[in-house]
Image 1 (cartoon, rainbow, N blue to C red):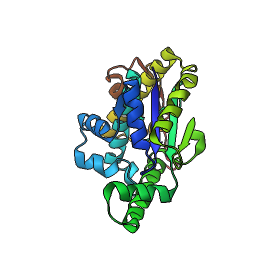
Image 2: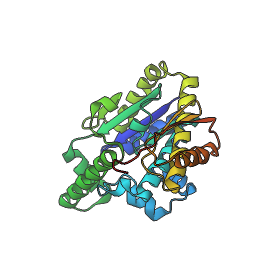
Image 3: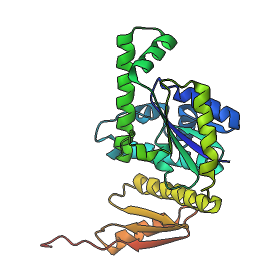
Length: 268
């Protein structure tokens, strides 16, 4: 059993390869449809999902409440899917969200731009000029999404265990390359450690979502073995106690540790 993340350029055959891998392994296939369904379960309406999902949002978007809410909900959907194991996760920053989890295979699927243009024209019709515009916009959106929400470069080779260029490789060869890579990555798997880490990551998103809903700003959250550590400056001991009380009430929180010093502005 394994978890596979696949990052793909539009027109690279990445979606087709991901679907075949999931089918051959009889794994869950988690792409936009499944993630969107999970996001709506956390209270995000379809228009909000469309606004942020693998798009290049304005610079301020991920600092707005809806952008933050989307980001936390998306992480919970992906972490929960990874916890169930036997899943192929397509896009949505899975290679970054799960990079701390041992035994996850991260795959990048690319192709030269001219190949991608040709494939898009053959698939959807239209002309090369329009197809080129669509592909370049898709690349900007995907790269901007990763940059805006993760402060990372989706083309960074260090994020991936395997990169497949489909210029000369058909879908079936790409599938076989991934299947051959799985045993090597699974050998590094530590099931208990992975489950514990995923539980902590899920709990962290729950805590951050509750704080966001309470309009709490500038408080950093860390979770280890169910123990939540809150850090950041506060204006009074009452404020600190209220945050601790708020977080303590969240299901799954074993203990809350406060590292929130009281900040007194100069001249007061």
